[in-house]
Image 1 (cartoon, rainbow, N blue to C red):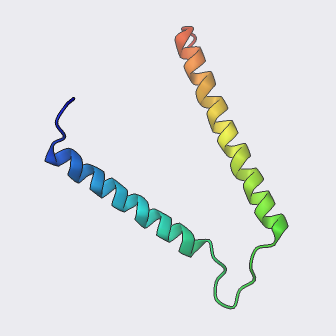
Image 2 (spheres, helix red, strand yellow):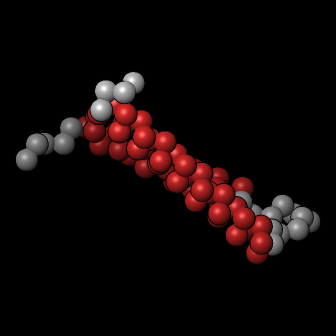
Length: 74
């Protein structure tokens, strides 16, 4: 097993810190603004559907890109 260096540990610590910061901003940003109206159930469903469709489209396009690359069509 390879010994873990200081640079690896420092890089990992910075990346974990950035991930935690992004999670905090996500939680704060997705809440209803003060005095605002919270999103309805239909809004949450529509947003979830949009996220799933967007991820599926991205995954499908990436799969097509790798497929065409392996078969020499690009």
